[in-house]
Image 1 (tube, helix red, strand yellow):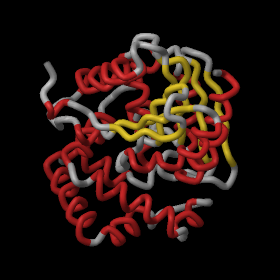
Image 2: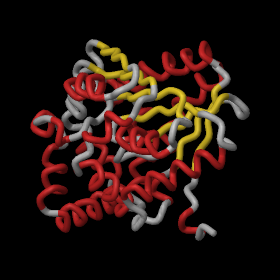
Image 3: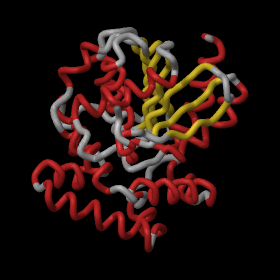
Length: 277
């Protein structure tokens, strides 16, 4: 029997009884950010479910972590096939959970996806390279940084927002000036850094070698990426398309960066969902 600590909470948007689409939010990020799917989910009869991974015991790691999420999805969907969307580092989690679900994922969408760091010299192209280097080389100091970010999220969330988006490029610069976007991201940061150890778990998992897992993932995959993305450089999208064993295609949007790609891709993803189901 699962302990209460092991129950993963979730947010649901879109149509109440529509085709299930599991959304994996980024890191940092939270399930609340998936509110942007709500309108398009309703229009296309899709039920968008986003699990709040921070509500899982931070000591649950590795294969057991991915399998637990997979089991939660299977239980909620009564074993029926689902579709998955992974945004940013959530794409990494989506890929690992997809592998754990043993064929129960029908289609996969990777948006502004972070590719494995062991696949190429991607890290030097990433705006967050200092954070990843710190996590690789000094895990204890990285944990302290995460706790500091948690303090900022509670006391000065606007400052943390400005720090994270100081390197914004492309249309992300326009989003940063938008009050609704700013409020959504700040709420997400407060939720994310309420449990800094859960944030650390995702980062620690991501920086480990995992390129060898990609050939085992055969589900049909669409990759959506912004040409100006400096958080997940576009070379990552090109690598993922080449590494996945199943059918994969990539749509690159000119002038778009990280979050602006997500906002552009969401209506397209939901329309594809309606045409297929």
